[in-house]
Length: 289
Image 1 (cartoon, rainbow, N blue to C red):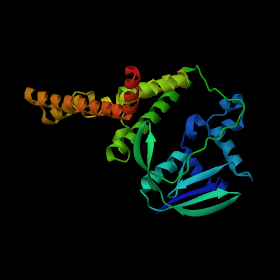
Image 2 (image 1 turned 180 degrees about the vertical axis):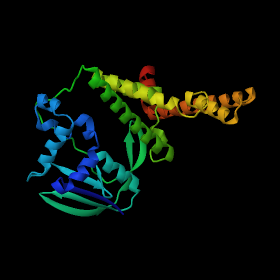
Image 3 (image 1 turned 90 degrees about the vertical axis):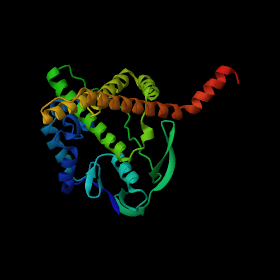
Image 4 (image 1 turned 60 degrees about the vertical axis):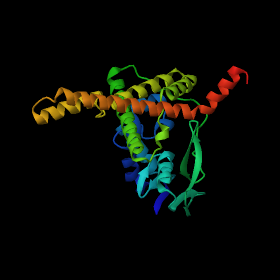
């Protein structure tokens, strides 16, 4: 039975909070101090000073928030909880939650339901709750820096975070934890780009960056015809201490080519099936039927 617990963030749980936020304080030395400081003070105190300030807040009489645990390990978002629910596959979960200053416990089992994701129906294990964004109305802070010595480390950290998230998702895709029908092709990329552009140029550029990073990682996969496959061939030749025959290279390259075409075809087929009803409706309207 999996355990999901939610407890007030008190001084005795500081070590868990520190482990959850990691050495960078979740992001760029924030340590959850951004809502508590003026933007000018926040920029000056990033890192250890924010950490010590947050520790003083935690050690005060009033807990500043809640800390969630999954099987005894602290987690940082509702997404982590949702991932635990999906992975439970219907086995009972013991969930502890805080309400009105008290901690209560219940057992709940997820049910297999059909949901629509990006226009495609798939089955998922759900318990019937969704995340709620808690947003305080008021002034917002735009953290912008023109100093390349500050911006470059941030860019490296964000790229590493995006790469890690992609590799984690790719692993779940290979193991079947994520449906392969979620793979999208050019139509889905265009749809996501349109949605991002509607949200603003910053979101659109962010999507382009993510796509570029993903393509770079895919290019390093050990598939012949890709750079990763070429590196694998060089490694094999180094171990053999001699070049592969021309015929072997041709077979390997042809295999890689057909594999790449198959993957692209599968992604495009997902696009077509995901948007089939819209395509049929568009044809009918165009033909006046």
